[in-house]
Structure formats: C-alpha cells, structure tokens
Length: 152
Image 1 (cartoon, rainbow, N blue to C red):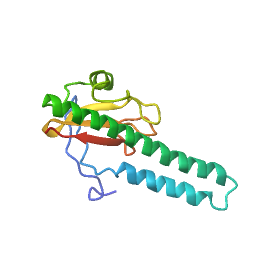
Image 2 (image 1 turned 90 degrees about the horizontal axis):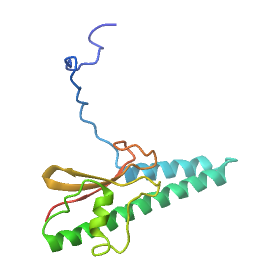
Image 3 (image 1 turned 90 degrees about the vertical axis):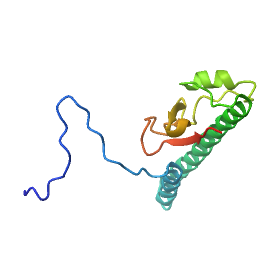
C-alpha cells in the first residue's frame, strides 16, 4: 500500500484529544421519513407486513409527539422570555420545567416519546437548544431531534 492512499490527518500529541473533522448530519425528521418509507416498502409482500407497518406508524407517531413536546417547551420558554426579558438560566430539564410550570406551561414536559429525558444546552449566541436523543437514546447521533430558542 502506498502512502498516497493513506488517510491524511494531523497527528495528535499523546495525552491530547483529537477533534473530529466537521461532519454534516442528516436532518432527523427527514431521517425518520426515510426510515418510515423503508419499513412500509419492506412490508409489501412480506409475511411481516403487519409488524413492519406497525413499526412505520409507531416511528411517525413518536417523532411527531416528540416534536410537539419540544414545541410546548419552546412556547413556555418564549412566554418566560417575554415576561422576564431573558432566557431561563437553567442546566437541565427538571430545573426548566420547575421554573416554567404552571405559570408559563399548562403541563410538565420532561421526556420524549421514547421515555428519554430532554436535554438542554446553551449554544452559540446564547441560544438555548432543546434536544431529544431520539429512538437510539444516545445524544449526539443522527436521529436526535433538536429545537432552538434564540434570545429576543
């Protein structure tokens, strides 16, 4: 094997952590649409058709339910922000919902449709990011569902 074919990367000194190269992840909602479409196409003519169709419908419902829950949280945060003039300074979903309920939200929303706790992070420009780990339950993967709330 020649060195021409070898992958090119910057060497990382021992004891330091390498930074992964920039990657473009797929849109999670589009990923679920593709997954659902694939399950439905596999169902055609299969003995497992009822089961595969059920999985496709379940994926659609859970994705939609999780998106709606994130939008409820986003609405509560916007109401808080309109009254207080700033985004809530919290680090986890329990603190956030304790702050928002009952004045800014009618119900407590802490979990996605897969029973995973929502995560909260502050990202660039003091933007609050709400996220679900998606069906695999692992944060930071392609199936995560995210929603951002920007400061006013």
